[in-house]
Each structure stands twice: as structure tokens, then as C-alpha cells.
Length: 187
Image 1: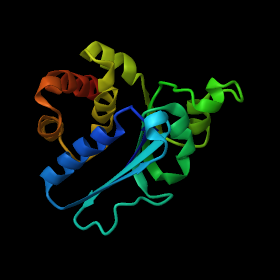
Image 2: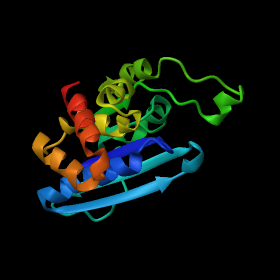
Image 3: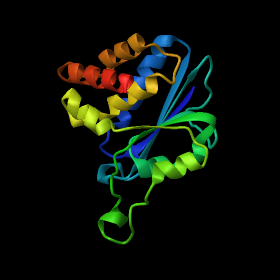
Image 4: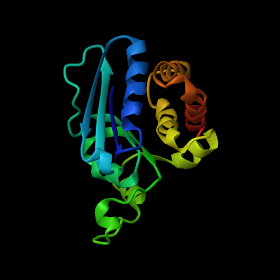
């Protein structure tokens, strides 16, 4: 299983990869993680790869190989379309984070990104993860909401996902993250 996580710095992509990795490790087999940071501390692009299965040789996912792409932001989703394999699943947070050229007025945020993706024949599951994270009690749990949405596209049970969250998330944030996961799973 090849899962690619894309977003911008500060959205929790690295924690998400660790939760996914923990869930995969609990299944047994081989798990590889790789993190690619752009200007992540300044809101730049961040990409994380999680690969698991019987035997995984490399942590890197090449174009056309991702079974699932978990996008924390619409423009980042659009940027990495070529990595999704035919028949793969794209889970996209409906949130928009303006990149620096948009902030400075040099360009506009592209319109209708999700509609364009669907028009390309891509199977998109869109979710307002930010609102669900607020409902769970903390907007920083957006990443775990998206894991909940994605969980249905994997061979890992809901209970196994919850155990991975318990193993990965600090105790003081555990209940809000479990609530966020459950809201995403039911979305």
C-alpha cells in the first residue's frame, strides 16, 4: 500500500505519517516512511510517503504509484495529481492555504480545484476537516480527521487505527485526536 501525504508546513503531515506508520507496523510486514520538506517552517510544501506490505524495498513513491493521496490543502492536492495511480483514492481537505505568491498579490488562488480534479476522472473524497476538528475540540486535529476519512480506503480496521493513535499521540491530546478520528471516519 502506497500512501502519500501532501500539505504545507504546520498542518501535521509528519504526525499523520507516524500514525499511519504505527497502524501499518501493527499489521506486521514491512513499513517504510520518508519525509520531504520544502520550506515547511514557512508554510511551504511538505510531502510524506508511507509504504507498507509484505516487503518494501524503498520508502519513495514514484509518479503513478500512490494508492491513496491524503491532501491537507487543495492546491497541494492539485500539485501532486501525477502521483496517484489509476483507480487510486484522493482524500482532500477543502481548506485553502494561500501560498506566498497569492499573499503578495502576484497571483490568484486557482478556482474550482476539486471540480477540475474530478473532471480529470480522479476519484475525490472531499472533507471539511477543519470544521470536524473544531467539533472534536482542536483545529490542530485536522490531520487526524483526514486519517479517519482515509481509514476506510485501507485494509486496517477502525480499532487498529485507534490503537495506532493511542501509541503515537501524547496522552494530553489523545481524547481530542480519537474524537477527530471518529468524526472523520463517520464523515
